Image 1 (cartoon, helix red, strand yellow):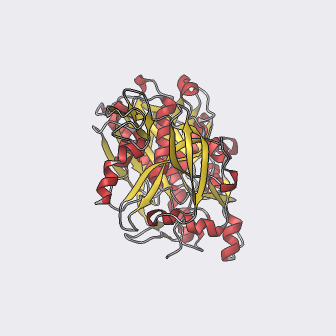
Image 2 (cartoon, chains in turn green, cyan; image 1 turned 30 degrees about the vertical axis):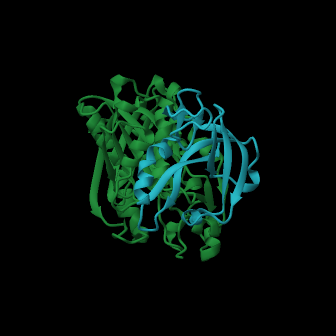
Image 3 (cartoon, helix red, strand yellow; image 1 turned 90 degrees about the vertical axis):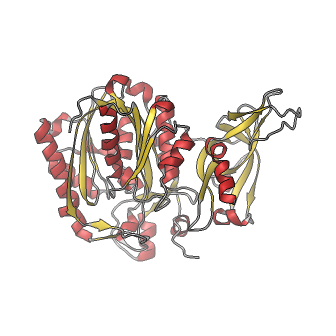
Length: 345
Length: 131
C-alpha cells in the first residue's frame, strides 16, 4: 500500500518496565528444562498497558517537540487493556495535554495491533483528515502459570507520531503491505484471564506463513530485495522464530540483531516489533532502509519499509530505549506473581 | 461519589499540575484555592517542573485501605527544581537505595483502584531519574 501523499515518522519513544525475571527462575518453579529466552520484562504493581503507552508517547512528543494541538488521533494497539470496556486513549489525551478535538480508539489484533494502529493513522494523515496522529503498541501480556507463554509474555511499548513527509519526518514510510487469514493459533476468550494456544501450530501455519507471505508479497510488489536493507525487524515471540524467519527470507544476522530484543526483554506483544524499531531508530543513520514485519495471531502480518532522513539526529528519543534496559533489575518468581496479580486473594 | 471526585482531580494528577499564587508566586501541589503564605485568593494553574530531589522520606507498611495493594511503598518530600516542595509516592526504587538528595522525576502510574471491577485512578508518582 502506498498513499498518494507521503507519510512518515515525526517522532518516537519506547518504554520497558524496570523489572526482569529470568527464565531459569520460572523453570525452577515448574520443572521445565528448556527455556525459550534468557529473561523477560514485567510491569511494576502500579503499571499497566496504559501507563506504558503514556511513557512511550511522552518521550515521542517531548523528543520531537511535536505540537500537541496538531495531534488529532490516538490509536492504541493492545491485547491487555486495563478495562474490557472503557477506552485507554481518552486517558492519554488528558494526561498528555492533547487537544480534545481528537479521534481515539483501541485496536486489537493480538501482537500486531500496534502496526495496525500505524496503518490507520497513516491513512488519516495521508488523506489530509488530520495533520498528525499517535500510533502506539503496548502490552502487559499474560501467561498462565506453568504454561509455555509464561516464559515469554512480557511488558513494554512504543509510540510513533506520524505526519506528512512535508512536515519534516525522521523516517519516511516508503510502502506497506498487510496479509491476513483465519488461522486460530492463539486466542483469549471473553472474560478469560489467560490466553490459550495450539503449541507448534503457532509456528508454521501461523507465524512463519504470515510473515513470509507478507514480506515476500511486499518485496515482489515494490521491487525490494533483502540486501537493500540496513536493518530488518521481525515479530519476536521468542528468540528463535525471528532468527529463523530472517534466514528463510534471506536476511542476515547483522541486519536483525539491533532490532531483536526478545532474548532479554521477552515478547512485548503489540509492542514487540515497535520496541525493536525504536531501538533501531536510536542508532540509524540518514538514508538507512529499515524493513519491519509484524505478526498477530489469528492471524496476520504487516510489512513496512522506512527510509531514515537527515532529521533523525535532532529528534532521537530521549531517553533512548537503552536507558530503560540499563536500569532493569532481576526479581524472583514470588515478586513476579504478586506484581502480575497471579495470586487470588 | 468518590469516583467523581477523583475524576475532577484528573488533570492536576495526570499532568502534575499545581497552583501558583499570582501575588507572591508561591506554588502548591495539590492545588490550593488560597495562598497560605500571603493569604491571596488569586491563584492560577501551573504545570510543575517534573524533576526534583528527595528531601526526606518514609516507607509505609500500614497504608490506608485503598493503597493496601501497593504496600509497602515509599513516600517522599521532594523539592522540585523551582523550589516547590511536594509530597509524592516513590516507585521503581529499592528502599535501601533511597537517599536524601536523590534525583527523581515525575512519572504516570496507577494510584489506586475501586476494587477489581471499579475505576482505576491514575496520577503522578516519582522515580529515580532515567537519562
